[in-house]
Amino acid sequence: MIQHKTLAYILGISAAALLSACGSNNDNAAHNEVSSETSRKASLEAVDSGAIINGSDLVTRCPDDKILASPVDYKPLVFAAPEGDYEGWHAKNGERQDVITTESGLQYKVAQKGLDNGASPVGGEVVTVHYHGYFPDGKVFDSSYERGSTIDFPANAVIRGWVESLQDMTTCEARTLYIPGDLAYGPQGRPGIPPNATLLFNVQMIGVTKN
Image 1 (cartoon, rainbow, N blue to C red):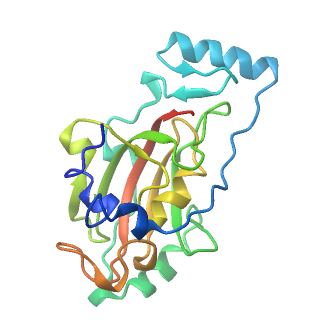
Image 2 (cartoon, rainbow, N blue to C red):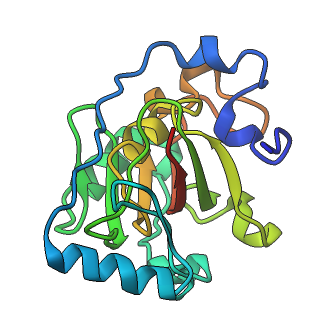
């Protein structure tokens, strides 16, 4: 069950306005077929450690031993955006060798690779994640880690920066997302989040519910 209050910063101003606010999203993440014997053996090992595998041999639940226990495990680099200069902040952040910048302007750093035979969400398939949301200066505004519980929600029903990243992630993958304002809340901002603010999230894909 989606916890609307605890997801306020990710989902938007209200759950009722969520789908219209998100607009149309490209369902561009298709899961890959796993056919090699090596992948099948990895799947069997994943079952032994608590993972769930669907009929196409894709692991849909991250084994317990691969779940990151704390935001500290992501080892993110945190530095403030001087006087709200988020554009300049992103330019500097993008110069780091381990940071990937996509065509949309989303930036991310892989903290842990996903499983080779891990599932990816397609469209509105429900994902289970752990996340830790904070500003460039390190100030936390929302965190499932701090609440001690993962959350479930449709992968296409979140802010644009999340949608783009989630569709490209596989089970167990962990990333630090550096989301520019136009892929988050834009010029309108929201209570507690300044207009055009860059938002950072440590996110791990714990599970995917395949349709």
